[in-house]
Image (cartoon, rainbow, N blue to C red; front, side):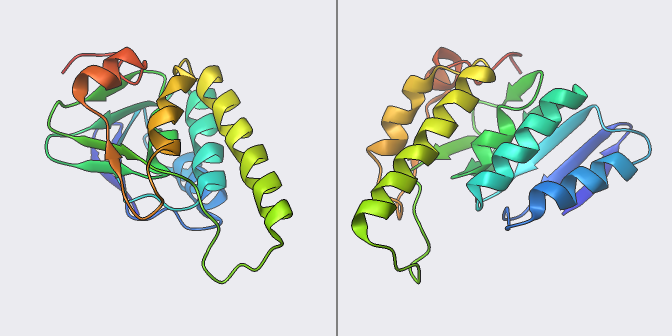
Amino acid sequence: MLTRIDGATYRLEGAVAEGDGARVKKLLAEANPMPDTLVLQSPGGSVQDALELGRHLRDRGIATQMLAGEFCLSACPYILVGGTERQIDDSAQVGVHQHYFGQNTLLPASFAVEDIQAGQGEVMVYLNDMGIDPMVMTHALATPPDEIYVLLPEQLREYGFVTEED
């Protein structure tokens, strides 16, 4: 859900569902005034939609922000790093884990592995394009999909997530 906080600052909250990349891009285009900052709080969701939205934020020059005590997990960090400037409060939680197919997806193992590896490659290119050290993926790849690795404030700075100190 996209709501205006004040001025040109908006809040994007909730899970990232399939198709949200296009939906949220449309909402941002229709927003008046045009957003310059997007505050995030999300448990994550669709990686492809998060990547699409992150690229859109970068193309439009929109900054991202995490407020004290809030969270951006799973696919949400891909939206977060799309911000041209990124401010993350030290008490905010930014968490990563392995990507996975839905439990009802039945694929032969060889195709599943192929798809996962191709997806990870796409994510690593995206992170590099956004100025993020792709080594952050070591934490994601080592954390099972039903768990979350919360990056420490110093890791967020080290990997390039933070461009502005709060």
